[in-house]
Amino acid sequence: MSNKINLIRLFIILFIASISLNADDSRIVYLSQTGIKYHIKTCRTLKKKPIAVTLKEAKRRGYTACKVCRP
Ligand SMILES: [Zn+2]
Image (cartoon, rainbow, N blue to C red; front, side):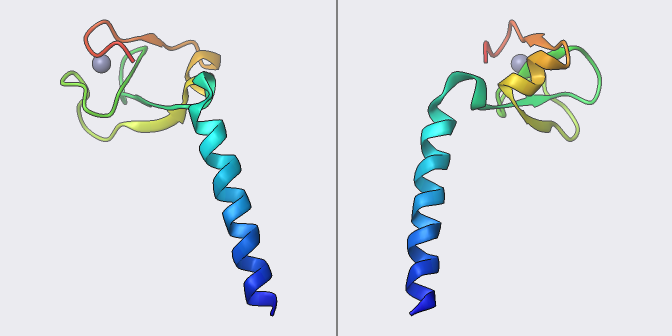
């Protein structure tokens, strides 16, 4: 019984999450360990371990869009 409720709750959370991911500032961008740009995951200039953050967070930290991958 409570498993069913948990499942429904999970679906609601996933549904809300998918909506917020579509919002521009909530999409995930990747920061390089060095530099001041944010990237998409597959950017060729992105080396080592990229840090995944939301676009909002990247902007808040003062990062700007990469000119190569245009995130
Ligand atoms: Zn890039």
